[in-house]
Length: 613
Image (cartoon, rainbow, N blue to C red; front, side):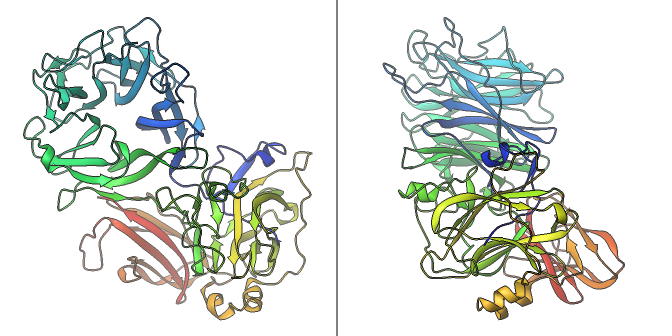
């Protein structure tokens, strides 16, 4: 059989097979998750995140393998990547390469970016180290986040006499964290240091202009041993409580301490474990906190290094942060039945990691129902769930707007039970279908859609066979215009194909799934905006004709919490706002919720909602 997808994301990186055809392609669905994965043998370490003009900018230590004769990895510039959605990344030019013969001739580490305290633009504090690994804090400026110029005043800070810091030797002064708060004229600079008594510590300096820093004269925070306190983050919640995030040198995991005072009373004995990530970065995005960390997992060719993106709630009842993981699967898809897709998308080239043939996946995630490695850290790479689970995954409807669709398909060669198919949204008839070739390696498939432009369709990915090669793999579904060269032979639409109901019936699943399909004509529930949200989000919907509808909010168990609307509505579009409260007016806690649209008593679509506080 043959394959499908949903328009959900703008194109940032095309699959190689479509690059050869037409550069103007649009991703329908590629199953990417909120990670940035570095190349083999390259590591990503301490980083800074800025959200500006609808684009996320990430600046990070791009750590290359140790060169012959060197005693440390090569870390001589900062990497720069951008993304509109934390899932699709564009590599920008690296910035701030080391400067031979200066105080920053050997290494550059740990960027921290703030908005300019004296006008428009951005300031970046960073660590520079010379040939002796004597470390200092430097400063650079940018007006556009792409071009950076070093300050002539750099270095701007070294620790005071309390620290074991001396030029001409390894001396710790790194990982700058700059903190500001409303009503306080001072900026606060925290940095990693070592006391003269050989205890890991944080230095503290203050400044009113961001250039001239005065050391506090004593360490701000002292560890109970010689391990360094690294990758510090200081934030303040809505109640005025301060939160310190950090990790210890050469250890895994981020730790957290809450405290009522910014400058005194901090105790290492009150630290609690947050998660296994390192180099935590908290970035304010509107009313929410983006939580980023780096980590590595084992791989067949060596460790795989990545950045992970989540949200975090720091204003909690117990003063301990709650990490809110971003959904792995786009809410443009929903499982109609079964368990085959419970651990999807698959993270990484899982077949390759266990020694099988490579999958030809694009990006860092794809659908592969044989696999059981949905995200890094979930058991080990190469783990499988096998052929036994079955299920069906369906996309939201979308409108065909180009004359070709391309995709990658692998898995078992079972055209009636393991397939990806494109269906008409009104009569549910099959238009195109693809199955695998009994291989983990996905191959390019093409569909000729020129006669279907303007047609409403949806995609279904089926794994309804539990025998040998009872699995399906799909990735990189893209819509594009034919440009004179075909990277393969495209299939024509199926004439008078079977309906999805008939396919399910023949496979023995008619009674299981047919009732859960949306009616041929009715309406649809649009994506919520914003999402995640705080304190409210807007839910749009479209009705094809006047109807009785219900728009409800549920928790993860399906319990109805809020009835936003129950009654008649006219045809056309509408919007309802949910303020995060239940039917009694009670504010609900942060977490995952679902909005459902029912038309004439039948559930049409649901959307995931993430409430952050």
